[in-house]
Length: 454
Image 1: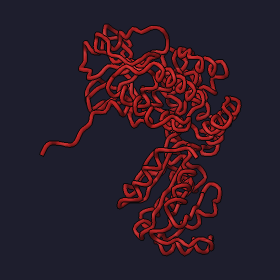
Image 2: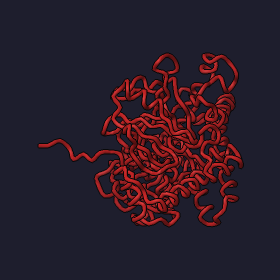
Image 3: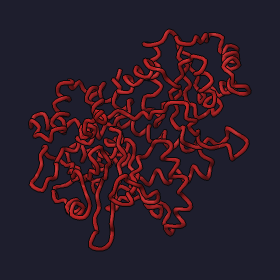
Image 4: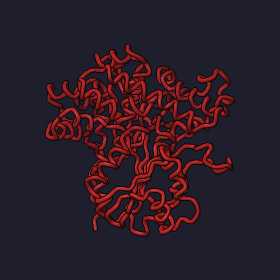
């Protein structure tokens, strides 16, 4: 069994006064498995309904949503189920396929039941569930439930799977936190494992395949199937016309990232003029975001706090770097594994850093000025407790950072970091240099805060 951080979150959730929990996330990141494991270890009984596999279960939530009515219908349709408040976990899987069940969460919880719902795509449209097209909308949070996003394995979870001890990981974290040079043997091993992680990705099926076999043959097969399943979901959760347009957007992501200017441009999809293409595809792009297939990195309006995003200017990084490498093909896989990180103009390294920041709990943005004396491109801008942190990702041999230097001369920049294939150090200009995998431990850069003095 792969050790997952969200399990500790579930234990904490159960141990305090809690609302229903909704776990969202890209399909096949391990939501169903971890919830079943949690129920097996922490509850006397589990009642599980999967609205995608068993559409008839939607009838349980039709009509009156009082807990008594729901439990009565459940007892009729599933006579083996005997839910008891406090000792039974009710698990509603693929809840995006049953909005009525989503609406019932509050009432069931108020009756003392522990409830976890999960959905691969609670943020996408669901054509066909209602006759009224205006009701085919996303599930809007009602404010009563607790929501959490589950991702594929992050790098630390991958290290656990590869048998790396807590002591070693703790020493790596300390070096990153203190901007302290790392032992070369440890550094080389971490860099090797990170390249391996980039190729394998964090999807549980892919990680398990590699752990069991030690080769990439099975990994390639798993990742190919995962990418194909994304297209199947696009077809399932979209009308025929929207499915075609959404698939075009999804399939364009590798090409968008392979450009020098990685900003997502609608015109690259169809060759139409930018405004016309934006009108044609903008809603389909949002579907990809709602499904969790892409990590959206928006441009910031200005370099001041709080950071504000330009909603019409963004990059789309694939949520799992292994899946992206699989789409680029075998030459890309070999280049990344051999350490040639500049492959495809740094598309892979930037994607991996964006993924690491997201999984560490941060919102990656970027800053770009394309004209005039202030011309610059900052790969990532992150808001932390220290203020504004700017990040440049170096995928090749060039170690210069003119954009960061220019940014510091114009704006108040609290921390300037360069992620590259190197050891940890701070140079004479005050720039902090870290290996690429440090992005996965970005929470170590967050200052400790015990609250205001009383």
